[in-house]
Length: 361
Image (cartoon, rainbow, N blue to C red; front, side, top):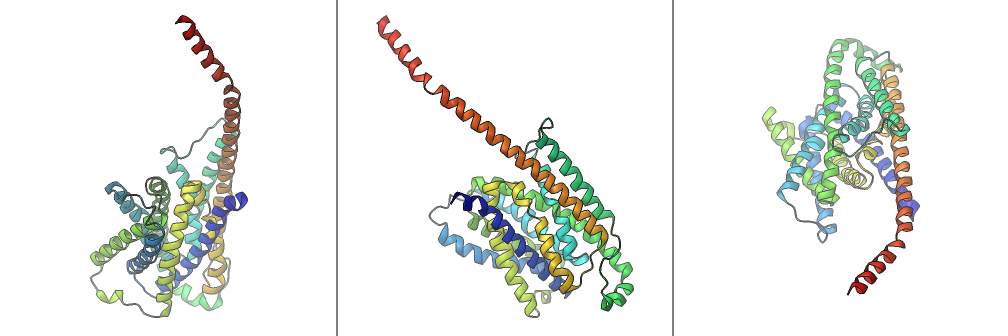
């Protein structure tokens, strides 16, 4: 039973990453068909609110703590950095680059989460220990990989002959959109990393994953709808066209923004923000397995080299974190043994004190 509980967060995060990979592929498909980003986000978060809110109402109604104004403010900002604005940046990045490239860029999320966790005291670095040096080295390698992802594109690794003519006609436009997509992914990555930090605070104050996810999705749906109406007043963009758009919205809402966020909130509560963010590279592998053969998306040399560097740096960082956790457990064990050795001496001291007082009387 203990081994099952230990492996439970790992299995949940792998299932979440597979689901996110499918969501990214569906997003790429519907965005290429011309669906508005913010309309998709609004529908997606609305479905997540209804689905997760229904589960949370029945499952957590007896254990739900009081919802204070401070918790509502936390959830409102959580919706900004984790749902509405962040999803808009990622959708823009996926449309202007590719699903595989977007997943590769998300590999930077664990490192950025680690850097953001330092000033909040959620992570520590001791340069004198091997674990601390490994964290610093892993962070630097990840940053180098991210720079390669951003600044170097390289040659295409696959030859899709039926796409060559369209690629030649739109080469200049593609390069301009690629730059916009990279900037959007940078902003989305920064926002997404900050969500893990904020979620660690929320999970302590409001430890109800279903209810908090439903409230966050509700705020996110309102935010994205307001932004969409402000940017585009045309009501025709809200009309869904084709089965693929309906399927993508339902899957992204129920699975992507619903159950996946519940699972991530639970993992942040159990293992911390850096552990949860560390599974992001797995999304890239799953997305590439579907993206390249099915959608015929091009994979570039810079993507591969940058992703390899990011993943190497990431697992150096995780090795350092694992080493640090083992050292902490050893220290806790030594302190527990010392406390046990000191416990038998305390009653003798108390007995002597009482006897002295009785003699004085």
